Length: 221
Image 1 (spheres, rainbow, N blue to C red):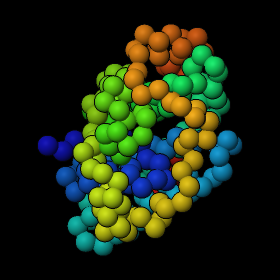
Image 2: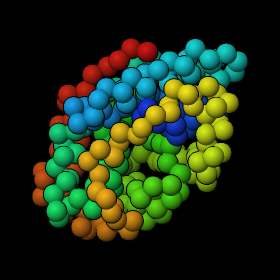
Image 3: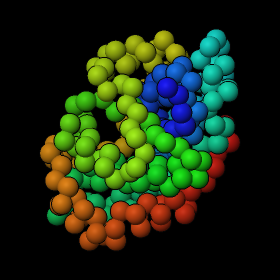
């Protein structure tokens, strides 16, 4: 059953494949990119734009569905300043969980603007520390948007093959930048109470998300 979703899209391999898979299911997709400039360079945003434009320009059914159902407006949200708040000794090991919780809270704000019901990600189980079963649960509880994870059970080799088949792999390849501030030994088991207390200590998750979103901008695709 198709619907309306917010897609959290990076310049990596996974998220554009997830977008393509849900386009093929007839979903209306509104992309959001969390920019970590100036901690990182502009490459993440540049690749995200190139990937979405590639889908829009694709031939065949995927391209037709992208031109029909993929929003031409990419919302770019600066998050670096607030992500830096989670690099203290008392919260750094949970950094990646806080990061994903922040991204999902931002998706909620965008979702309210266009009446979305779901949030789409390229997450797959266990690939990185924030994608253990417990941490995925700790992330999804911050948003009323239902999770769409079409890559959840695929391994990286399979996802790379999918990306190659739709022509996004070459665009996505290159160093990942989302872990620029991350810890060397991230936690793999989320503790809801500790996460919430840590977020309140730096101003509250909803406040941080609203602050980020207030500085968002639109990139026309």
